[in-house]
Image (cartoon, rainbow, N blue to C red; front, side, top):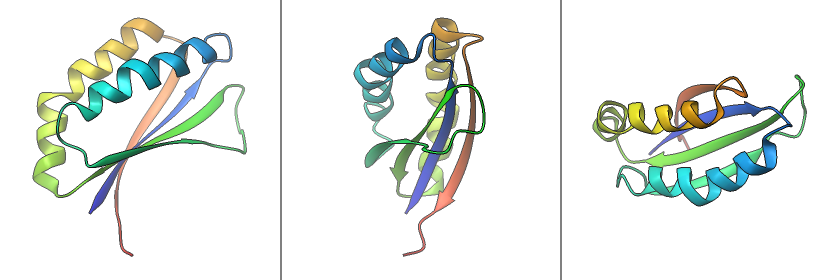
Length: 100
């Protein structure tokens, strides 16, 4: 099993609206791709910048699944976030392997 982790720092000026939109629109859209088994939304407690930071963790079963997601779904979903919150966030993505 693997985790697709998206870490996002969001500007405080749009935080509340963004978090609501992520919970009600973006996360359900990601889960509706059928590529992920479960998800977690985690707030980073120690801030190292001026915004608020979150980790979105999506569990998937194998590498062909994440390749399909990145090819077929991620570009459009990422464009939606950028269109709505451009200049108000920074994000980076990592793939993690669950060992235990």
